[in-house]
Each structure stands twice: as structure tokens, then as C-alpha cells.
Length: 95
Image (cartoon, rainbow, N blue to C red; front, side, top):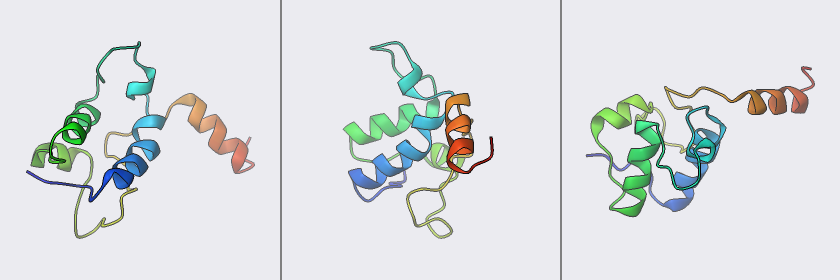
């Protein structure tokens, strides 16, 4: 078992940068529905439990405690939403 985040702020930073901008994100699910992404689901369970996830989930999300000590690396299964792509292009003058 692995604890990828030291605190709730790190968890929040990571999910904001990944899950909240991903096509599989919980925010796109109907109210009351659990995430359809295994990674986000495991992270939510960890958040409400002891903060630990399996090695498999850690690998799938791209966690490496040596190479990525910061909490905002990109998830290996990240798939940006069209809205986020459009926002990024506007902010970087790439329309």
C-alpha cells in the first residue's frame, strides 16, 4: 500500500489538476454517482480512510515517490475534457 499524498491539500491539488479536467472525472457524473474511474474512486476511498492506495493504482496514476515528489504530476490515464482544452487554448492565445 502507498500513501501518495502527505495531506489533503496535496490530494486536492492533484485531483484538481487531473480528475477535475478529465473526461472520466467524478464532476461529470450524475449527482450521487460514484466515479467511473478506478483511480479517482481509489483516491476517494483513500481520502475517507487512511490515505493509502494499492501499488497498482499508484502505478496507473503515474506516482513515483522519487521522480515525482510534487503533488501535481499528470495522471497516466488523464484525458482532457473539450472544455479544458478550449480554456487552455484561450489562456495561451492558441485559438
